[in-house]
Every structure is written in C-alpha cells, then in structure tokens.
Amino acid sequence: MKEDERLVEVQDLRMHFPITTGGLLKRRAAVIRAVDGVSFEIRRGETLGLVGESGCGKTTVGRCLLMLYRPTTGRILFEGQDLTRLHAGGLRRLRRRMQMIFQDPYSSLNPRLTVGSIIGEPLVVHGVARGRELRERVGEIMRIVGLNPYFMNRYPHEFSAGQRQRIGIARALSLEPSLIVCDEPISALDVSIQAQILNLLKDLQARFGLTYLFIAHDLAAVRHISDRVAVMYLGRLMELAPSEEIYQNPLHPYTKALLSAVPIPDPAMEASRERIILRGEVPSPASPPSGCVFHTRCPIAIEECQRAVPEFRQVKPEHWVACIRV
Image (cartoon, rainbow, N blue to C red):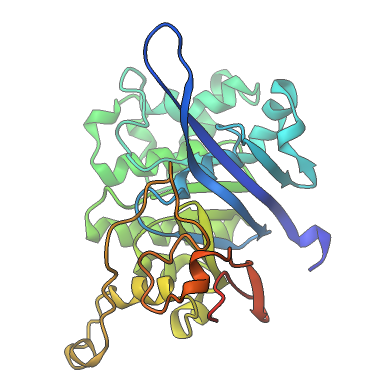
C-alpha cells in the first residue's frame, strides 16, 4: 500500500490499567490488559469495523486512537505523526482532524447547553468561527445531518434519541475531520432509527471523504457499513479481512461462532445452518489464559494452543488470522 493511502497505523498497541489496593499505602495488585498487542491500519476514505463481545477492548482501542487514553506501549501514527510522542500542544492541533461519536446520545451531550452551543463549541475552542459566522456554520451543519436549524436554541432533552445522535454527529463533523471514531453509535437506538443513522454516516463519508473506525457488536450493521472488519477477543485481534470475505469465508473459530449467532431472515436457511455454542465465560483481562487467549472456549483447540501464542499473520491476500489451526 502507498504511504499516502494510509491515514492511521497502529503498531503493537497495549493499554494496561493498574488495579490498586485501598488504604493509605496503595500498591499495584494486578493489571487489566484491556488491549494487549494490537496492530492494524486504516486507509483514507474507508470504514474499518471493529467487532467483538462486550469488554474485549474495542472502545479502549478507539479512545487510544484519539489519545483520550495514553497507551502503555505501542505507536499510533496519524497522517505520519506518532501521537504517542506528542505533548498537549501538538495533540491539540491534531485533534481538529480526529473526532468521536459516542455510544449514548444523551449522556454525551451537556444538558445545560443548547444544541447550537454544543455543535458550535469545537469551533469556538479551536478559534475557527465566532458570532454571526458561528451561527451560520452551526445552522449549515444541522441541515447537513438532517436537523432543523430553527431548533438550535433548544436543549438535548427536547429531542428524540435519534435526533440526539444526529447532534453528536454534527458536533463531530463541525471541524471537518479526517477520522471519526464511531463508538457503538447505534446500539442505544431503536432498530428503525439505526438504519437512518447508518445511511447518514455513509452519505457523510461519500460527501466529505471521511474515514471511520466503526466500533460495534451488531455484526449485521458492521457488514452494511464497513469495507474491512477486525474481530477482537480479550484485548487481541483474532481476524482482519475485507467485509464480504470475512462474512463469506471466516477462518478463525471465534469469528465463525460470532457469525453463527447472526439471525438469517430466511427460515429454511436459519433452520439448516449450524449454530456454534461457545462453552464457558470470557476470562478476566486481569488474568488472561496462557498461549492463545481463546483456547479455553475454542471448539477446535489442541494442547499446543495452551502454550503457543499465535502470530497474527496474513494467510491470503488482505486476510489476517491469529490461529495455529488455520
């Protein structure tokens, strides 16, 4: 791939959160390995879907990309610059190019601010617009995301959940970023509204050349919007491939299990297909299993899986897997 096609490059990213004991003399008791050696890239203008069970580290990856969490180790290259080496001033300048859409469209909006103030705040903070120009810019952004500018003096509680998520999208869009991290942006919405938000995100991407990291656990939604899909489990990447390839030809046993749980609208196909049931619970990230982290639940695990940490390797063009059985 050409260097100018790569917008984000993540190299061996690790994010460990210490667990400390209470009392006056606090000491580190353990470490939660939320993200444990993740590497991937995001190309300009594409949508990379990041999927996995709750607690696997998806949101932590997204927050590390925007340096809301400073990684324990690893490198995050954005437009060729290593974000992990930048201090507050350098990050502030780059943050105009990176934005986030949060999961809960209500708690992520300040209830004391009007919608116009919420959408316009990034423009004021970065000194982009003020006064009449700011109001006109906010009105234009509201129209783009399907909101009536007439309501810019209303407060978030006066809007529906779908409209509040549009406000969040408008806020992320206001600084004309290159990258938007979408952290489960439709999981708190009704099914009928989810399709509207997904279509809006696709329209905005086509119009402004946006690049998305789309974090979700809804595999059907990820298939609809993503160009490539990465599958995470217990802080590590299990599989990464183009969207249709991963849905038509999954190679990792964890990916196969996830896809087998997605309902099919054809009753005959639904009745005939094999359902893969994973045994046990997801291990604690404070004490992950040795070897392959998935071996405790894997239906095809062998004794070697308990010892060998599988290399995340390319097994066919554009298709990466971390499994010694593949």
